Image (cartoon, rainbow, N blue to C red; front, top):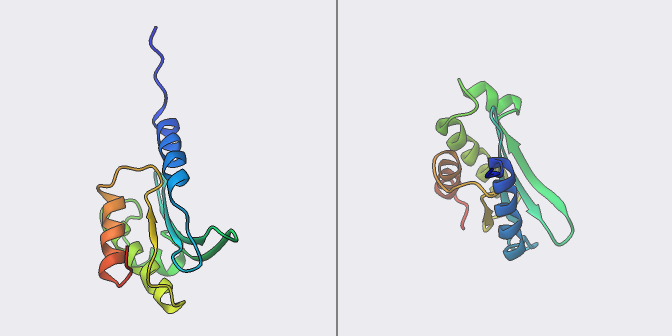
Length: 122
């Protein structure tokens, strides 16, 4: 019998491989993305000290008020704009993008493109 690893385990292994190669610094922190079935989360993290500098998700009241659904491409794009605005307000212009083991398409790509358009560089 062939045993197949779950999609969640495959994603976690991809994320471990990605994280072994990239890390956020004080000059260029890491923009980490997490997707659940119902929501999306984005954090900007300085890995040298282990601090989250900026965070946003579709659970935030001001973000959720603007959206009809919290788990589609439009919601991801709006979240990208919000995280970029918060980062620019804190003086963060350049980040390293951590896709979290997810394929770079759909919601993850929409979040990244919206953050780029809003002024983040990566």
